[in-house]
Image (cartoon, rainbow, N blue to C red):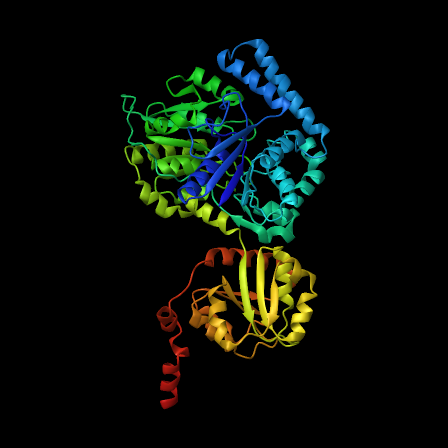
Length: 589
């Protein structure tokens, strides 16, 4: 399969989103897929296609990004040059005013650069995977999919767009652009087959509730087995623990003040090395100058050197964001090393808190915790965990969802699936809620229906049914049903309105071992106790108020159940009382 990723930076620079994308690309390549990556060109990007990677990589530019690349190149050689620093600020201002001038926060010159690159690939991709941010990549893929509707579109959303605190630097900008940004998000959601996301669920439920069925939650796919030995190899030699932070800092978003205060009081047991880039260095510099024996401010290292850097540490420091809708990926990278992790929360509902708490070598300092208590907690943690390290297999067993292979599995399945039902509809057994679910999932779920001639005509005239790509045909002979069952992802059952009648159909479904979805209308539906004992069953209540959530549950179940099938012996053991032998024994008794 030909898969095309659209990202911001790429080789040789990998920020958090690009690391996630690279891990997904590597899994796809191992599975035999053809992968192309389209990325924005930066000053250190290769001039042409790189031979250093197994995937094809193309770089795009806009007029502003070309100018910015030239400035960054000079700053890399002379970072203190006032003229180039001034040029850097000028580029930032041009970018900001470009954001203000547009209808939304999207820069359409970058959208067009991405779209043009996709058009000029020389082939039509089977699947487009824009990784956001930037959201311009998502928009470009939406524009391309309008001309090529057969292409699967599966964005992976790591960051916010309309609610982004970094894209919209001020509340004024965010509110000014909100309506237009929401409309851009809406178009992207409607055009997508599936949207993988880390923290976008709540936002979509609030602003796009009818599209929530397309969302599939993932964690940052960064739990990758290290290629190097990560045993601490560069101790300070003074008996103190070496604690390392490597990442970005920003006032009001990820502030190191609490961490710095703690370690300035712990210089007898620990030394904190902070590898920071950009303006965030200004947040560390005063403390590092005042307490050089406790804190060192060091230059950021490229991602290619990160593994070697982390190998030196006795403990790794994570600093939480001030927004709960942004989940830093740093902790997952730390976990892959097996090293002790100290996480300092900035807010009460920090999204990383539970992950670090579940990590056996993790310590969490809660937001607002008493300074003395926090300091002593850290002291005890460093002393208790010094020299300890978890094996990668132990970590991966605990944090399965962070495995890139899990994200790729969800990505390729594209959510939803293929349902099959062969049966009679009537006023007592209506397909109404099935049609509502098909409409809500917007093409992610397709039904294959075999029913009476009158219902064939009615379904062929139903817009939700037709738009979903579902099909309907007349009855088929009973001896053909096993072959039809084999070709679908899931078998569908619809209960009667009173719910008193036990359907014999579900037992035929169970005998096939296939996943089963049952739509019921009353809580005392006679089929529910039997389906509760079947390991591959999902029951959905006909409830209009829960339609978005039910549609989301349906898509997630189909994603989870895809390819699963029970052998007859397993079903027979689980449902023994329903076998002919068990019934005969009851009759004899």
